[in-house]
Image (spheres, rainbow, N blue to C red):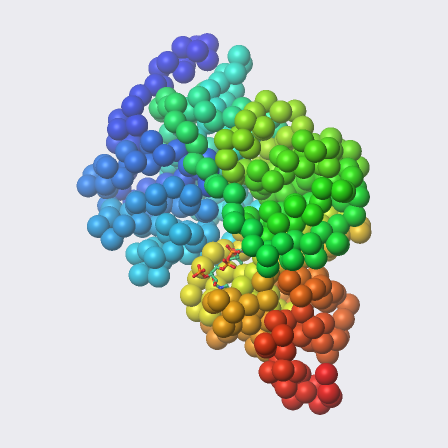
Length: 432
Ligand code: COA
């Protein structure tokens, strides 16, 4: 059967498609802004027909209604990264959290975490019947490859992005057509503290470096201070609108990359329509699965790879906590360790952990003598590279515990330096 006839034979409504999900199924949802909203809404409406459907999702940017208490019998969320719409369900015991490196999720789907159903969103097919997974390729592509049943929302507003990011119409079981705006991530508010951190991070970046940027105000603030750099490259888990400006200004050219020159390599995208229009049919953007982009051995093939991520707390040894506040889980490791490891192994690479010096309106120092009870270490003291706050840069690699503690106290908020100095003196039997 030619692909056009096949496509027509698979067309259905969201309401009909979700009746094929069965109680007890493991359902993997397309990641982040690639979430298929129409199909998810229909699945939630059909909740009464299910018991114990496991919803596996990472960064959930949609409504997350399957986490509501009234659906506790119908859905159980298994989160690979907690976010605003899902955190409460885990805190209240209606959901679970599975710690996993982002680059290893496709491997889990191929082995111990077999998906029964994949709910994904794709672009309309091209002339050969291939749909692009668009803004979310990451684990979404492997979910399509592994699932017993694939329900795809074919959205005319999903950009057709290039790379290893295509699924063929024959790979899909049910097709639901849509013409709906994608989920967007609005640009963050960048305050003076973030600007100071951004400027400090930017001072560690040279012409020709290749960048990985995390999500949020700090990575966006770094971009503000890169306008005078030349020939930067992108090999990043994700990027947002800020990178578009740097490409248009001729700052990001990818010309000096040692792996995939000429291409911004990325596994998912979160931003506004401006970003989604920029990446549409743009041959300079290459979307690849996360087990390629985030594989530390792939990352390391980029010389001068600079990774910039954020965290919750750093203790005086340089142990970095990024996913919990004490016992309270707040996010997930995502690609932090993938890129810290890759950057550490890259020739000329640097891994940067950037954070404001305080939290809770200045009441809490993020540089602490000890990490909070119950917190989990995300980036170990053996892996940490640079820590940056609005007060400066602490380079920790190759430094003794004593010298690390000195460097960290020097970039702590001034209100907390005296108490940290007392701890230093107790621990190292020397004056600061
Ligand atoms: N003690 C108490 N509260 C703290 C705290 C600390 N040491 N550090 C942060 N917080 C609070 C903040 O006050 C804020 O509270 P609020 O929501 O009530 O305002 C909340 O925790 C989130 O902190 P914030 O600094 O605003 O978070 P962020 O949006 O900049 O995200 C991380 C920071 C660390 C949570 C995020 O970067 C992350 O999840 N990282 C791990 C994953 C990763 O790096 N992935 C790779 C790139 S995508």
